[in-house]
Length: 206
Image 1: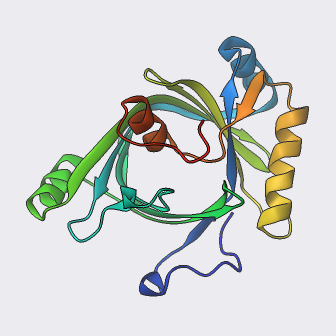
Image 2: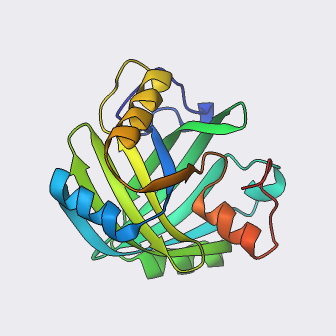
């Protein structure tokens, strides 16, 4: 969902902004869920996706009990990007995020530059991702060795604000026929991996 009425932080004004409204579910049956997506959607891309997350030298994103900032180098098949994400919460749940991203020609060289500049690598999320176009929604089926399988449902249109758009994401999930379990609304993949390693405690548990 592009644009929106939620302002980014002041130091990022003027940069290209994408407002992302999505919800993540645990997948109970990978085969059934993949079959549903193949019937009802169009496969856009299926490849290994590696996200390397960093802390800048002047700030520890994980100093907060509930992190709201994420900086990553993403490698997805034959493409790569450099992304900053600012996450918004309401009543302990993620509602949406402001995402700034740019394409990268040499992700390995970028990671070297970040290291030289004092950026600290926090965690790597290595997953197999299949992305499907399901009309007003994109669904990513993610298989992560450390965590299991999840489905991320992202709206690609504005249904009338963040709250209504999130409601539509949930309605789509409920009516899709996918074998979905609990939602994961209070943590991202890097948080979940760090929590599993005992390096971070997710507020409210997960």
